[in-house]
Image (cartoon, rainbow, N blue to C red; front, side):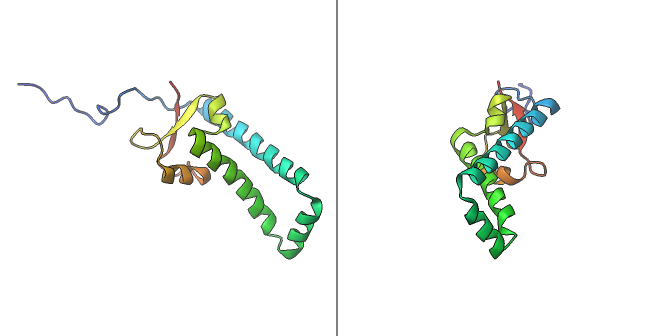
Length: 125
């Protein structure tokens, strides 16, 4: 008679290791630097008069524009490459709680919040 050695991890083909704290920190730092650079470039490219007129209309629009710039950058890179530039540089990837690549819905959620979701950083093999 054959023993049943199935465990919760038996479905995992390759052993996935969670990224180190340093890898996660450096990934976040690099992506933050890219976010700041993108925001700076947008402010340099778009004429100042447009931002002044937006600020006169409603002062809350400027932070919304900044958030949209960051979200668009992350969305494009996650949809096209499944990772951001920081993740590429430090060789980490997102996996869901089943150790699978993210679905489009999970990618969209990971743009805004990964800390409280089931999405985690893992080392790239």
